[in-house]
Image (tube, rainbow, N blue to C red):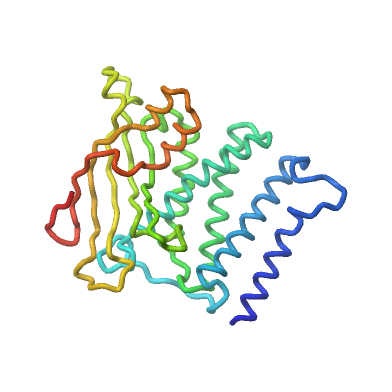
Length: 278
Protein backbone atom coordinates (compact mmCIF):
# COMPACT_ATOMS: atom_id res chain seq x y z
CA UNK A 1 0.00 0.00 0.00
CA UNK A 2 2.93 2.32 0.66
CA UNK A 3 3.96 2.18 -2.99
CA UNK A 4 0.41 2.85 -4.17
CA UNK A 5 0.29 6.01 -2.06
CA UNK A 6 3.70 7.15 -3.32
CA UNK A 7 2.49 6.63 -6.87
CA UNK A 8 -0.60 8.73 -6.17
CA UNK A 9 1.53 11.50 -4.66
CA UNK A 10 3.75 11.50 -7.73
CA UNK A 11 0.73 11.63 -10.03
CA UNK A 12 -0.69 14.59 -8.09
CA UNK A 13 2.61 16.43 -8.36
CA UNK A 14 2.56 15.96 -12.13
CA UNK A 15 -1.07 17.08 -12.15
CA UNK A 16 -0.25 20.41 -10.54
CA UNK A 17 3.04 21.01 -12.35
CA UNK A 18 1.57 23.14 -15.19
CA UNK A 19 0.39 25.67 -12.59
CA UNK A 20 3.88 26.40 -11.35
CA UNK A 21 5.99 25.80 -14.42
CA UNK A 22 7.63 28.87 -15.94
CA UNK A 23 8.63 27.98 -19.48
CA UNK A 24 8.88 31.48 -20.82
CA UNK A 25 5.25 31.60 -21.89
CA UNK A 26 2.24 33.04 -20.11
CA UNK A 27 2.08 33.03 -16.34
CA UNK A 28 -1.17 32.02 -14.62
CA UNK A 29 -2.23 35.64 -14.12
CA UNK A 30 -1.91 36.23 -17.88
CA UNK A 31 -4.07 33.29 -18.93
CA UNK A 32 -7.58 33.72 -20.38
CA UNK A 33 -10.30 33.35 -17.75
CA UNK A 34 -11.41 30.01 -19.19
CA UNK A 35 -7.90 28.58 -18.74
CA UNK A 36 -7.75 29.96 -15.21
CA UNK A 37 -10.94 28.08 -14.33
CA UNK A 38 -9.56 24.88 -15.86
CA UNK A 39 -6.19 25.04 -14.12
CA UNK A 40 -7.72 26.31 -10.89
CA UNK A 41 -10.04 23.33 -10.67
CA UNK A 42 -7.19 21.02 -11.59
CA UNK A 43 -5.19 22.47 -8.72
CA UNK A 44 -8.18 21.84 -6.44
CA UNK A 45 -8.30 18.19 -7.49
CA UNK A 46 -4.56 17.85 -6.85
CA UNK A 47 -4.85 19.50 -3.43
CA UNK A 48 -7.73 17.24 -2.41
CA UNK A 49 -5.77 14.20 -3.56
CA UNK A 50 -2.67 15.18 -1.61
CA UNK A 51 -4.63 15.96 1.55
CA UNK A 52 -6.61 12.74 1.18
CA UNK A 53 -3.46 10.66 0.83
CA UNK A 54 -1.85 12.34 3.82
CA UNK A 55 -4.90 12.44 6.10
CA UNK A 56 -7.78 10.29 4.85
CA UNK A 57 -5.86 7.19 3.69
CA UNK A 58 -6.67 7.57 0.00
CA UNK A 59 -5.30 4.65 -1.98
CA UNK A 60 -5.22 2.15 0.89
CA UNK A 61 -8.44 0.28 0.07
CA UNK A 62 -10.42 -0.92 -2.89
CA UNK A 63 -13.53 1.14 -3.75
CA UNK A 64 -16.31 0.62 -1.22
CA UNK A 65 -19.44 2.25 0.13
CA UNK A 66 -19.99 3.64 3.61
CA UNK A 67 -23.12 2.95 5.61
CA UNK A 68 -24.47 6.15 7.19
CA UNK A 69 -27.21 6.72 9.71
CA UNK A 70 -28.00 10.28 8.68
CA UNK A 71 -28.75 12.11 11.98
CA UNK A 72 -29.52 9.05 14.09
CA UNK A 73 -27.95 8.51 17.49
CA UNK A 74 -26.00 5.47 16.24
CA UNK A 75 -24.40 7.32 13.30
CA UNK A 76 -20.65 7.60 13.80
CA UNK A 77 -20.81 11.43 13.86
CA UNK A 78 -24.42 11.90 14.88
CA UNK A 79 -25.11 13.49 11.47
CA UNK A 80 -23.06 16.63 12.03
CA UNK A 81 -20.71 15.56 9.22
CA UNK A 82 -23.65 15.86 6.82
CA UNK A 83 -24.02 19.50 7.78
CA UNK A 84 -20.27 19.85 7.24
CA UNK A 85 -20.65 18.65 3.66
CA UNK A 86 -23.59 20.99 3.10
CA UNK A 87 -21.74 23.98 4.56
CA UNK A 88 -18.51 23.29 2.65
CA UNK A 89 -20.32 23.18 -0.68
CA UNK A 90 -22.33 26.28 0.21
CA UNK A 91 -19.28 28.39 1.12
CA UNK A 92 -17.07 26.96 -1.63
CA UNK A 93 -19.66 27.85 -4.27
CA UNK A 94 -19.64 31.45 -2.99
CA UNK A 95 -15.86 31.68 -2.76
CA UNK A 96 -15.32 30.33 -6.27
CA UNK A 97 -18.03 32.58 -7.68
CA UNK A 98 -16.30 35.67 -6.28
CA UNK A 99 -12.96 34.37 -7.58
CA UNK A 100 -14.34 33.82 -11.07
CA UNK A 101 -15.79 37.32 -11.08
CA UNK A 102 -12.34 38.68 -10.28
CA UNK A 103 -11.04 36.75 -13.30
CA UNK A 104 -13.47 38.55 -15.62
CA UNK A 105 -16.67 36.51 -15.66
CA UNK A 106 -19.93 38.39 -15.38
CA UNK A 107 -21.85 37.74 -12.18
CA UNK A 108 -24.48 35.28 -13.40
CA UNK A 109 -21.98 33.12 -15.29
CA UNK A 110 -19.52 33.20 -12.38
CA UNK A 111 -22.28 32.16 -9.97
CA UNK A 112 -23.18 29.12 -12.06
CA UNK A 113 -19.55 28.15 -12.61
CA UNK A 114 -18.75 28.57 -8.92
CA UNK A 115 -21.56 26.28 -7.84
CA UNK A 116 -20.69 23.67 -10.48
CA UNK A 117 -17.02 23.77 -9.51
CA UNK A 118 -17.86 23.33 -5.83
CA UNK A 119 -20.09 20.38 -6.65
CA UNK A 120 -17.41 18.84 -8.90
CA UNK A 121 -14.56 19.25 -6.42
CA UNK A 122 -16.53 17.86 -3.49
CA UNK A 123 -17.82 15.07 -5.71
CA UNK A 124 -14.21 14.20 -6.49
CA UNK A 125 -13.49 14.17 -2.75
CA UNK A 126 -16.33 11.72 -2.20
CA UNK A 127 -14.95 9.57 -5.02
CA UNK A 128 -11.55 9.63 -3.31
CA UNK A 129 -13.18 8.59 -0.03
CA UNK A 130 -14.25 5.35 -1.69
CA UNK A 131 -10.55 4.41 -1.89
CA UNK A 132 -9.85 5.30 1.76
CA UNK A 133 -11.03 4.70 5.29
CA UNK A 134 -14.26 6.68 4.94
CA UNK A 135 -15.84 5.03 1.92
CA UNK A 136 -18.24 6.59 -0.57
CA UNK A 137 -21.35 7.94 1.14
CA UNK A 138 -24.60 8.49 -0.73
CA UNK A 139 -25.78 10.74 2.09
CA UNK A 140 -22.67 12.91 1.85
CA UNK A 141 -23.16 13.18 -1.89
CA UNK A 142 -26.77 14.30 -1.39
CA UNK A 143 -25.70 16.97 1.10
CA UNK A 144 -22.95 18.12 -1.28
CA UNK A 145 -25.59 18.58 -3.96
CA UNK A 146 -27.96 20.46 -1.67
CA UNK A 147 -25.13 22.71 -0.46
CA UNK A 148 -24.10 23.68 -3.99
CA UNK A 149 -27.72 24.34 -4.99
CA UNK A 150 -28.34 26.45 -1.88
CA UNK A 151 -25.15 28.38 -2.53
CA UNK A 152 -26.41 29.18 -6.03
CA UNK A 153 -29.84 30.22 -4.73
CA UNK A 154 -28.34 32.60 -2.17
CA UNK A 155 -26.07 34.19 -4.77
CA UNK A 156 -28.90 34.74 -7.24
CA UNK A 157 -31.31 36.09 -4.59
CA UNK A 158 -29.54 38.86 -2.66
CA UNK A 159 -32.67 39.64 -0.66
CA UNK A 160 -32.47 36.13 0.83
CA UNK A 161 -28.78 36.51 1.71
CA UNK A 162 -29.53 39.83 3.46
CA UNK A 163 -31.92 38.04 5.81
CA UNK A 164 -30.30 34.63 6.37
CA UNK A 165 -26.77 33.39 7.05
CA UNK A 166 -25.50 29.82 7.11
CA UNK A 167 -22.54 29.68 9.50
CA UNK A 168 -20.13 27.42 11.31
CA UNK A 169 -18.75 27.97 14.80
CA UNK A 170 -15.35 26.38 15.35
CA UNK A 171 -12.85 26.45 18.18
CA UNK A 172 -9.69 24.46 17.25
CA UNK A 173 -9.28 21.44 19.47
CA UNK A 174 -5.78 20.33 18.56
CA UNK A 175 -6.81 17.80 15.92
CA UNK A 176 -4.59 17.71 12.85
CA UNK A 177 -7.47 17.38 10.41
CA UNK A 178 -9.50 20.51 11.09
CA UNK A 179 -11.98 19.63 8.33
CA UNK A 180 -13.36 16.66 10.27
CA UNK A 181 -12.94 18.04 13.80
CA UNK A 182 -16.68 17.85 14.40
CA UNK A 183 -16.27 17.70 18.19
CA UNK A 184 -15.48 21.40 18.13
CA UNK A 185 -17.98 22.60 15.52
CA UNK A 186 -21.52 23.92 15.50
CA UNK A 187 -23.57 24.54 12.37
CA UNK A 188 -26.37 27.06 12.36
CA UNK A 189 -28.82 29.17 10.41
CA UNK A 190 -29.16 32.80 11.51
CA UNK A 191 -32.06 35.14 10.81
CA UNK A 192 -30.59 38.67 10.71
CA UNK A 193 -32.96 41.30 12.03
CA UNK A 194 -31.24 44.06 10.06
CA UNK A 195 -32.40 42.35 6.86
CA UNK A 196 -36.08 42.45 7.84
CA UNK A 197 -37.71 45.74 6.71
CA UNK A 198 -40.35 45.62 9.47
CA UNK A 199 -37.64 45.78 12.15
CA UNK A 200 -37.09 49.51 12.56
CA UNK A 201 -35.44 49.68 15.98
CA UNK A 202 -31.75 50.41 15.38
CA UNK A 203 -30.67 48.35 18.39
CA UNK A 204 -32.60 45.25 17.36
CA UNK A 205 -30.78 45.38 14.03
CA UNK A 206 -27.62 44.37 15.89
CA UNK A 207 -29.19 41.02 16.83
CA UNK A 208 -29.94 37.78 15.05
CA UNK A 209 -31.96 34.66 15.87
CA UNK A 210 -30.15 31.34 15.51
CA UNK A 211 -31.07 27.69 15.09
CA UNK A 212 -28.15 25.29 15.33
CA UNK A 213 -27.00 21.69 15.69
CA UNK A 214 -23.89 20.07 17.12
CA UNK A 215 -22.69 16.77 18.58
CA UNK A 216 -20.27 15.93 21.36
CA UNK A 217 -18.36 12.80 22.47
CA UNK A 218 -18.79 11.04 19.13
CA UNK A 219 -15.11 11.22 18.26
CA UNK A 220 -13.88 9.87 21.58
CA UNK A 221 -13.54 6.25 22.61
CA UNK A 222 -15.83 6.73 25.59
CA UNK A 223 -19.17 5.15 26.29
CA UNK A 224 -21.98 5.73 23.82
CA UNK A 225 -24.11 6.80 26.77
CA UNK A 226 -22.16 10.07 26.90
CA UNK A 227 -22.88 10.96 23.29
CA UNK A 228 -24.87 14.13 22.66
CA UNK A 229 -26.84 15.36 19.66
CA UNK A 230 -27.79 18.92 20.50
CA UNK A 231 -30.19 21.28 18.83
CA UNK A 232 -30.30 24.85 20.09
CA UNK A 233 -31.91 28.22 19.63
CA UNK A 234 -30.06 31.44 20.42
CA UNK A 235 -30.11 35.20 20.32
CA UNK A 236 -26.78 36.59 19.17
CA UNK A 237 -24.94 39.71 18.13
CA UNK A 238 -24.96 40.21 14.37
CA UNK A 239 -21.24 40.92 13.92
CA UNK A 240 -21.69 41.35 10.20
CA UNK A 241 -23.95 44.35 10.88
CA UNK A 242 -21.49 45.70 13.46
CA UNK A 243 -18.51 45.64 11.12
CA UNK A 244 -20.51 46.85 8.13
CA UNK A 245 -21.45 49.97 10.08
CA UNK A 246 -17.75 50.42 10.86
CA UNK A 247 -17.00 50.30 7.10
CA UNK A 248 -15.09 46.99 7.41
CA UNK A 249 -16.94 45.30 4.58
CA UNK A 250 -14.58 42.34 4.14
CA UNK A 251 -14.74 41.52 7.84
CA UNK A 252 -18.52 41.91 7.73
CA UNK A 253 -18.66 39.41 4.85
CA UNK A 254 -16.55 36.92 6.83
CA UNK A 255 -19.07 36.92 9.67
CA UNK A 256 -21.81 35.96 7.24
CA UNK A 257 -20.16 32.52 7.24
CA UNK A 258 -18.49 32.24 10.64
CA UNK A 259 -20.14 32.38 14.07
CA UNK A 260 -17.91 33.93 16.72
CA UNK A 261 -18.09 31.85 19.93
CA UNK A 262 -19.49 33.45 23.10
CA UNK A 263 -21.42 36.14 21.23
CA UNK A 264 -24.88 34.67 21.84
CA UNK A 265 -27.19 33.35 24.53
CA UNK A 266 -28.48 29.88 23.73
CA UNK A 267 -30.86 27.21 24.99
CA UNK A 268 -29.85 23.66 23.98
CA UNK A 269 -31.65 20.33 23.96
CA UNK A 270 -29.77 17.01 23.99
CA UNK A 271 -31.75 14.80 21.61
CA UNK A 272 -30.18 11.63 23.02
CA UNK A 273 -31.95 12.07 26.34
CA UNK A 274 -34.18 14.48 28.21
CA UNK A 275 -31.33 16.63 29.54
CA UNK A 276 -31.38 20.33 28.73
CA UNK A 277 -27.98 22.04 28.56
CA UNK A 278 -26.76 25.58 28.45
